[in-house]
Amino acid sequence: MSTQETPEEKLPAGQDTAHGAVRVADEKNPFADPGLPPHEPRIQDVDERAAKRSERTVALLFTLSMLATVGFIASFVTIPVDQSVYIFPIGHINALNFALGMTLGVALFTIGAGAVHWARTLMSDQETADERHPIAASPEVREKVMEDFRQGAKESVLGRRKLIRNTMFGALALFPLSGVVLLRDLGPLPGTKLRHTAWQKGKLLVNMNTNEPMRPSDIIVGSLTFAQPEGLDPHEHGYMNEIAKAALMLVRIQPENIKDKRELEWSHEGIVAYSKICTHVGCPISLYEQQTHHALCPCHQSTFDLSDGARVIFGPAGHALPQLRIGVNDEGYLEALGDFEEPVGPSFWERG
Image 1 (cartoon, rainbow, N blue to C red):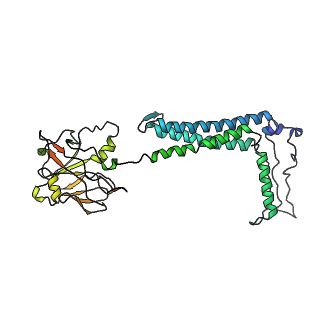
Image 2: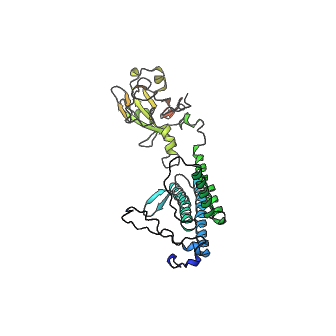
């Protein structure tokens, strides 16, 4: 049954069929108020079965929001961070990001869609006009506002439509749990892992390009070579986290040109090993000037003197590059004699 075919005897009690009668402008009042258009009842206003269908639709949307919120939490807990999935036509994307975005979007959308459908089909759609009034409301106006609020609350059918009320409360109660679950990413605390790397006594220095152990003869004066600890596999999970701390650069300097006493003691035949990670914001250092023995970070031009304890001579870096003590094992390969004695990379709040 359309709203145009609704007989007047079925209109809700108190319905004014003359509502919104249009006033015609004349010579005396050329700007007459045209009034509101005639109010037409909706099918839900005269057919309780239609109202029930709308109620179930709203409840279904709120229930979908609750299920999506549960899906968000389940996705966050169960889907690995590095797992990818193929989605046509997007291609391969991160499975966790896709699941979190979809479930959170559905949870928000269905709450909004349920509220809109509820307002458009079940709440009162009677339009009212009121004269403008001063900003400071009079006691009579305030009383009228409260009366309108109470009337609106009554017409919202929230008390009578218990299915809508309960599912809405459930959706609104569950949805904030999405944000609470995200707090998990604030922990656990890093502990001492920022102070230690994969280097330890006896670890061979492996060339990062050839993946072969290195001998002193492989490094010539004036060259720059990059190394990593033996046992790191680029294909294993966690490799990037480990190499971000353990990446090493090796240079060979004539022993008489090394100015820092400890640097000379920790070197082997003029081969010195320093962290490749800049102490400013953690960029990889990759430029070396063999005449001055200066290493330059390409990101912000921090410059370190590798012949003088890798101290900072220019740029925003806060402290020298950490040095790794190295030696040669019985087979003639370069090896570490321990870990770095200070944290590598940028300063952090617990450094000391």
